Length: 112
Image 1 (cartoon, rainbow, N blue to C red):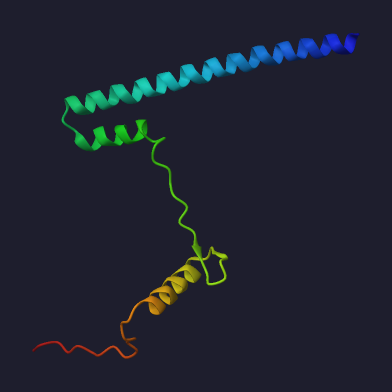
Image 2: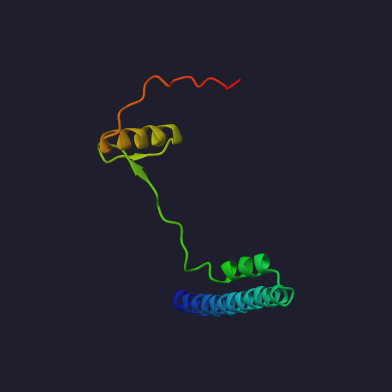
């Protein structure tokens, strides 16, 4: 009997804490957005377009997510190393273009 009462009591405390955290998060988010909006308004009043668009980007950050630009080799495995990625790009363009390969770069002499 005590176990069930303790479980109910713990669930009740957890629900109360969870609700308090959610309310606090909403309040903090609202304050943050309000602060950014005020600084954007100040920037607009000062005709500071750089700061204005910086603030706008902060407000609209949820829409623009970074895309995963993973590069894969011929076998379909992801290439992580930057050197290997550059090598893969070289192979890709070498295979898909009809340009002649330049092995010897001619020297250009300065005009006297």
